[in-house]
Amino acid sequence: MDILETLKWRGLFADCTDLEGLTERLSKAPLTLYCGFDPTADSLHVGHLVPLIALRRFQDLGHHPIALAGGATGSIGDPSGKSAERQLLSREQLNHNITQVNEQLKRLLDFEASENPARLFDNAEWVGGISYLDFLRDIGKHFTVNVMIAKESVRARMEDRDVGISYTEFSYMLLQAFDFYHLNQNANCELQIGGSDQWGQYHHGDGIDPQKKRENIPSDSPCP
Image (tube, rainbow, N blue to C red; front, side, top):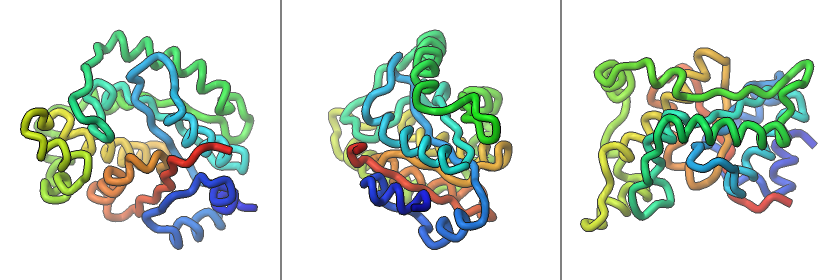
């Protein structure tokens, strides 16, 4: 089996933004892909486990995996699946959580492989250095509010007048799209995988770099 057949057979494939293009790309050579997680706690949970194991299956077949720790996005909070604002974490808490989770990642991914070792990045490395004005001009200009508020998790919060959604969490999807752009430009990353709860945010990566097709394999199926 190739990697897509393997994922489908194991119930780990839910959808893809360009299945034909991804199938063709995978037939040519190994690619670099990433899976992101926000270090909101000092331990991974099953929601992280499923896509991370899928990442390992890519690695076992010769592809180049990146585990992305959300040192920046974790300080904001992902509104997906949440009915209220997340509690904000300090940088010290986030660093502690990333260190702890990194030890768990070593059990799931091979960081010592000779040809395609896994890599761990923290998006605070590139997000922390960009000014608010530059981010609005260079990134925010490519996205419409119309599309952003159509996302289910955002719309549900906006319809709840007692809770609502802050501008902070509303901006989360832009940061996630910026992650893909940065990894594409600096680590030759061509693919993101993750849970189906992130599906509404995956499409936003197309807005930054029209020359690159963003492809995703989200899954929230139980891992066999």
